[in-house]
Length: 403
Image (tube, rainbow, N blue to C red; front, side, top):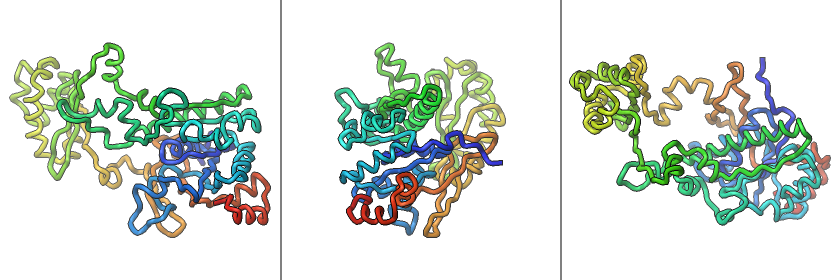
């Protein structure tokens, strides 16, 4: 039995580039939507050429991040510097349900492909715009990539250790979280149109989406106007709450004791009898007051264990714990990877591991296909949707419209 694809029959014209926008439409493609990615040789999507390339592969068609963000899509080339390409894009929008972009606010309008332009040719069109800083306001014209968005959001200032410079998250948090909000809003707009017949203009500022996902302490600061100190690995509510060394080079385990019972179980597993029997550490306030001593004692014991073995022993005893996995663990050792990572064949005979979305329906994952080659489907899409002949396609290509 194949898994149902709830967005089958929905067609998306996708002008997005880099990560946040393309990953948004990839999520919708996973759900069955036909996603037509608009690209150009005149300005190749930067994520095709930067980032990770598998060994021996140095091509715009083999970038690992591009494949991850653009699986389950088609690709067409339109040089939007050519007026005829703009006309073709507008004609394609007549046959699409959704048009997406993540450029600076007025870019689509200057091309004549803004919401009002597209609504004139298809009144019920859904247009989703994902500018970094929003379409309005004093910072709307600012350009930024993921690290800039994270800095503006307050996440960097809150991530790190007291008395040290901001550490940051080590990942482009906004690029990989905004898409889930974007896909949700587009899916909701599709549902709204089915109920009412109305199209929609959706604006999702990646900056706002990142602020929206701040944890409780920064949100608390917005209420009481007091700047919280960076927590490092600690918690104001629990002790211990941290990351501790284990056997091996740069191997660690995360441990938290949320209750007196979990504290007692932790002490028994690690053999911390003296701490367990000390009355002053029997309650959370006492442990919070002695957190430095507790962390040192735990670190001395955890350094004698394999992280995975210790995590198993602690979890079995009722203590929340997990190894700090590196990429090797995720790809090779973690049993959770089964079915989550899939080896996908590439046209030149290579293969690549791609991630499924972390969702199952009735125990099954949605189908996964490789990302498209640059312009791979130009002819097929333009002939199928617009009825262009092979001679017309050849003339357009010769004129630079399809480059």
